[in-house]
Amino acid sequence: EGKGSRLQVGSPGPAASYLRLRKMSKTGAGADLRKFMEKRLDLKLTANRHVVGVLRGYDQFMNIVLDNTVEIVSPTEKNEIGMVVIRGNSIMMWECLDRVK
Image (cartoon, rainbow, N blue to C red; front, top):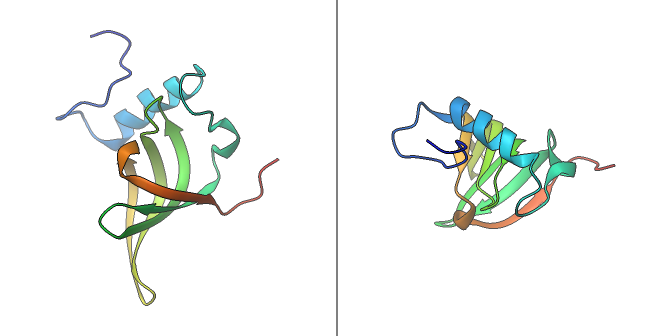
């Protein structure tokens, strides 16, 4: 079982992945997103998907955990989807919506 840093199929769910990614985010490996922790991010994903949520964790592959996530389906349709894990290779573009110190 190593360091528990990998996301695995059949894992207990986003909360467990969040804890693993949160731990990894403090190791300094990969992209340094520490200054964006607990900030709202607007992400454009592959397959024309768009989500907004609060960054709770990430790993060296830029897999990220968002909380209080909302999927923007259209300008008039939004789905609240809660805590999610998003694979780094599906992120096309992201923007921080909150002030960063």
